[in-house]
Image 1 (cartoon, rainbow, N blue to C red):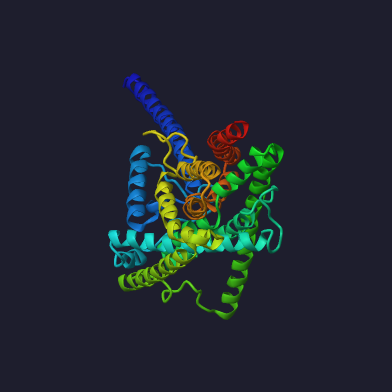
Image 2: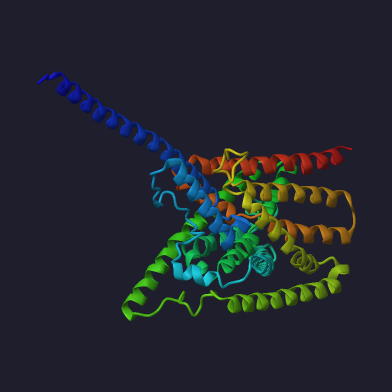
Length: 440
């Protein structure tokens, strides 16, 4: 027997084993590289979506987007399994895991058109409540009552509402948002995007810093941005920690008494009738709020009082909330087909910058137009529409998510881009015309 064939066969076998090992290692390296890239994209997207994703949060849109994304990932990586670890998951659980039974119940809910209408109604009602709360806090901490805030210091009038809204964002936008979503996803949209987004305002904060700078107080203006960012950032951290403590207490109570949590099925709006009833009730509340605001505005408009500005703000605030909600769908998308800068929440950025620019333009017109009625209209639009279009609670939630991600520098880059662009454009729109008018 010739030993050559056995040698060749052995050689061929060893070569095939070596080749298979090399091929396996190559596939693993390629899969690891692709997995790392996908993980980074997912991390960037979820961090950017930490505050709000607009109408993409609706169930029908969310499920279809999630399915198509996972399908494309599976085809691209073949055997890659992407576990959702704590480092990747957004601190705001926008789409909690649902069992097949819950999905079956959700299919019995409102159709897409009514779901949109219900979301808009929730946003409008909670937005008006946010305007009223912000106005109340400004008056409470203002010079006429507590005397804590002032237009001439870095403790600007919107600082208390920004701190309270950021603190509540830690509760209802981070820790307990999953529980609220179990009751109703639309209620979660209304409470976070609607109420907390309207309770806080970036445009008013930016305008007060412009007012300081136009009078030559540049150091105070810079300190106002730093102090405002620092206090808002630590307000949401304090809110998250206290909410976690409260959740721990609730779990101990439920475990000892063996009671059913408040998110049981009896509280869940998981049927068509319950969701329709909730929509009708909120619609009636919205009609009452708009009717009362319109009647009081008609009565007080000629006086030019702050009350007239408030009632006008309640009438136009819903438009700002809706616009911000639709812009939020840009968060996590990035630029172009490749989705570059996906970590940057362009929806929130556009909302805050545009509101700051429009508020600066209205402030410029107020300086040049000497009319009491125009001042009332401009102030009402600034308090309502622009105050609801811009937000600090969503901005600071995104900032906090970036700060706790793999790339904490993105948080400070995001804050710097928002403040520098808004303040820089505000100088061109507001400061320059005011300086020109004073010199002439």
